[in-house]
Image 1: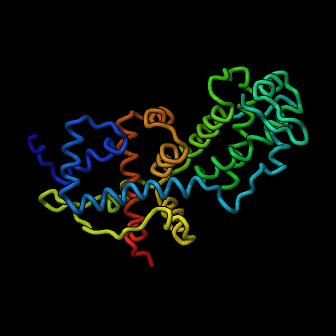
Image 2: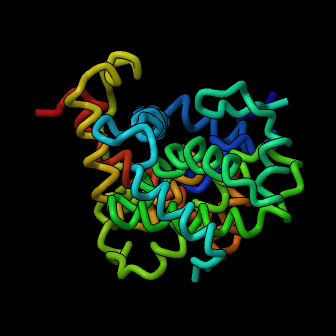
Image 3: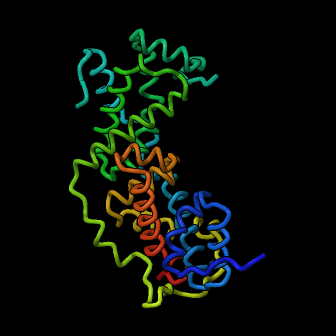
Amino acid sequence: MSTPPQITCREFQDFLLDYCEGQLGDEPRAVFEHHLARCPMCRVHFETYLKAIELGRRVLAEDDPDAPADLPEELVEAVLAARAVGGGEPP
Amino acid sequence: MSTIAARGDAPLPEADLVAGLRRGDPLCTSTFVRTYGGPMLSVARRMLRHDEDARDCVQEAMIQALRQIDGFEGRAALRTWLHRIVVNRALMRLRARASRAEDSLDQLMPQFDHTGHLIGPTEMPEVSIEDLIEQNDVRRMVRAAIDRLPDGMRTIILLRDVEGYDTEEVAGMLGISTGAAKVRLHRARNALRKLLEPVLLGRAP
């Protein structure tokens, strides 16, 4: 099998999102992975990119520890009151 | 079938709850608001980062949902339908806010030398996400890093990576092309990566 074409680190960046989303075809994926295997800077960038996404996702998915789990009662009452009078049309 | 736990009563099937809402049944309305309000408030808080704004947003979203309940077709779960409504309401509020220019974050994008090679570290320590996530300081730093992002970047990370919409859905919600959404998502993730680099490379103070 022939060696995939070389790309620069800048070009590697152009492929990164589509690679992460599984949207690269066979040939560009091989080019991307060829660069990834040979460039230590892009490898660190790639690993930190994936870890940053995962950290952000996990931390943000946690409910704010200071936030109440239920809707505040005055907000419940406000919605129910708006519903009862048939008003409160949101803008 | 999905069921809703009415307080002090037997669980109520979702279809019965929706039928009750359509009739204007006060008990169903109360159950609906109390059941779904908390999760909707969490979403609004994540997106808006402002407690009063988030409460107003949820109130608007709830009222909109109750008014449009006849249009709920039941193809998705009620929770999914409501999630979309509160996210769209939050987006409307974010659009009305003045946002910091994203250009100011160029220094958080990857830097290259004149030959196109990336400038950056060549080694990183073996640190697992699990080890990082257990540290309160790390979680605080992650929240702080996300808070430093302009609304447009933070919003696209929230919608795509946290709320779980795919890129085309996110583009539709933001009123931009799929290509533009991809560019913004990639810039946002790169900015977050740079802000978290000290944590990820074991160099955080």
